[in-house]
View 1 (cartoon, rainbow, N blue to C red):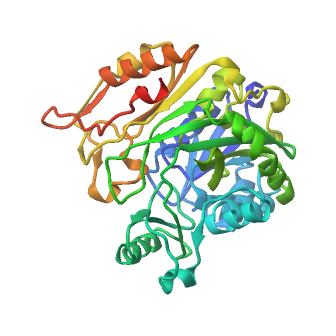
View 2 (cartoon, rainbow, N blue to C red):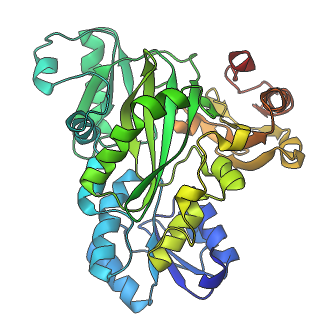
Length: 424
């Protein structure tokens, strides 16, 4: 799909570590890659053909950069904050943008997104208004409080009383650019993630997974330790909520791009609570890609340089049941401490069922107390694809037996890992 784009010039907005993969992928197809942000040593700049010190939030500055460097397309991902700027830059520079400023504003604000769900009869989680919170009126504990416009599980607290809620609000506001928070019912049911890809106004349900979390850390966001595909609730979603969600996207004019929706299951119904209209750190594309040739990164690079998501019809490629296979993205969580040694990477790299490994905390990385409850605690993410559930269980168990992150004293830094008993 990218083979014919050699020689094109792609600008990456924001050189965060996840964008290194985007830079490397584009360069393998002969695409010249430029990276810009306000940091001298942002990770993606080390791999770019050229880098610049123009902040990604400096709309006019980046537009001028696009003109002077004869940029053919722009791509960004993983950071919600940059999406509205990306839309403005593309519009001013006359370059393709997979979303609009208005839609990005909705998709990066938890309150606006949940209102959109309610207006379109899409089930969503109960919340309390700012007035109800300030008056301590009718709140049913426990609740969860979050910044309305932050990502990466930052600034989230679980609260069991009003005193804890006030502390949680103070924490949330520290991570909110707009200084707003949201208070929701604390859900304890099964979690799922839904994936929709868009092509020329057509919303395509690619699939969904069951999200398993680490429950060893009290009072903070429960972090994912495994995403298992396909979800056992796929049938229920297709019967009850898929049509309403697709119509909601059509109503607001979503045309292209990729989106994930986080949700809980209650009484077999999907209750959506948060979107991500961007590349997803959970790396679902390494499940959909090898099976359905639906790599989100490839498609967004292709769109940036051509204005089209794919050379073929995505709706013909999708299968929510991933063609009868079974898959898992593992993401074990680390305790606080410094990583002194990693064992078992060669095992993972040599296993034919493991398609991708992304290390979050390498040797000498430190997980601090302030990072508890954030995605900075993850050791790594990998994608495992197997022909049967039994094979998937065996590979997961082998990985968790053979792979470990150790501290200076040789002790494991891993919190409790995923129990495959839940898949039996």
